[in-house]
Amino acid sequence: MSYGVSAALQGAIYEALTASTAVTDLVGTDIYDAVPTGTVPSLYVSIGAETAQAANDKTGTGALHDVRIAVVTDVQGFAAAKAVATAVSDTLHGADLTLTRGRLIYLNFDRAVADRSDAGAGRMIALRFKARVEDA
Image (spheres, rainbow, N blue to C red):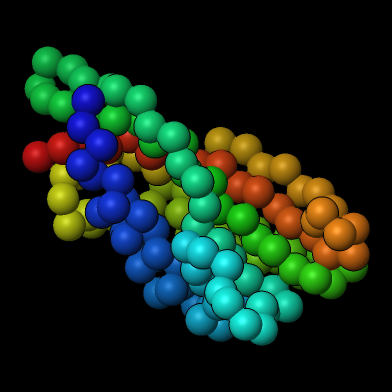
């Protein structure tokens, strides 16, 4: 297994989301890998946690990444968050991303959970994607 492709995968996902007009028309530049300090936007995308497991084969080393992306809003109701989650899913599912290290074999939507945020007033949709990568 190689975890070496992880940063390259995250960078490519970030680039795809920031290049997607479907996403940026809804959240602008509010796409992060950590919640911003100071005033938090009312609606944003957060590239979150991941897990990885070995996926080596006869041709080389690789990994299967379980990537989590959250759509977070302080607005009651799910409509705005679902619109952003749809744009994120449409952008990433099946995307052919170029990595700075290694190669993406596939990136597929796995599941989503829509729920109220901890405080109860807002909403969060946690999207999960499966990415198979090969280290070069």
